[in-house]
Image (cartoon, rainbow over all chains, first blue to last red):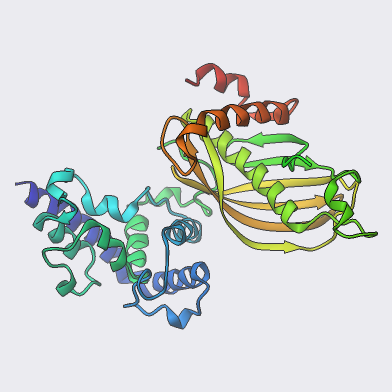
Amino acid sequence: MATTHSAEEVLKIRQTADHVLATREQEIITKVRQAVAEVLGREEDEIQPSASLIKDLNAESLDFLDLLFRLESVFGIKIPRGGIQRATQGSLTDAEFQQNGVLTEAALERLRILMPEVDPARLQPGLTVREIPALFTSVTFARLVAWRIGEQPAASASPAGAATADNNA
Amino acid sequence: MRYLLLDRILEIEAGAFAVGVKTPAMSEDYFNDHFPGFPVMPGVLLVEAMAQLSGRLLAYTVLATERRQVLPVLLTVQNARFRHFVRPGDRVVLRSKLLGLNENAGRCQVAAQVGEQTVATAEMMLGFDAAGETGVIPGEIRATLFTWANQVNHALLEGAKLTPPLASLEASAC
């Protein structure tokens, strides 16, 4: 039962992102690529959709932190801590999500829904939690941005978004 | 020279900005060598002043919004520009603006001015080590460091305009 419920949860995220991307894909992808290029000190044409930010572009956790701050200010959105990881695990307990660091089938199912940009052949049993970040590409972040834009209440589109501290921690 | 690159903090508005001042004195050791006969405050020290001010802004913001004590640690410096020399006796006014904040880190944009002239600008990220948790600072000296930070804080903040007021936070903290 947990699996079915959990799949519904990520389907909603997926649909929110898809809905926003349907009209704004080009704009979002372009701005995310620019941000990734700036953070990693690369040319924009090096940021290919399939390029793993970690494996191909040598990104580290510090770069992801920087990238998330930039995306928040560029798009006027708020990205929760561990945005992708948190969305991936969602309401699954640690035991439902991973066993000794290896992702469960429920976790893999969620990843396949959340990260359609990743070749399903890479989302096979045996994949570990620690290997997830290596799957991230610029498209992953574009989808994350689209999801957050879709979640935002239409009225509160403050320009800088993060200019004031949130109390929601 | 002590490694305190702020003389005083004038104002902090939690979640928004901080203003601090530094007046490097001719008696600072580094003016002997940087440069002989032409004393100029090193740009890296201006960056440190910016980082110290931004650290106070972030720590105050986290205290005000989450009632959590953190020790900010410099993670990145971006787009640092040194536009004009800072000479002994110049009153450098630093303004740090909060660009982004999450539970782990904050990002600030900082400008340093002497009079009307902007002498340096930079953006920076600082990560947080929280009191009572593990972090990048080794466990055995964490308590000492937090005590030290508190002492420095109190001295720096004397007479500062603080929003919300410090007393309201200290009363509700812990």
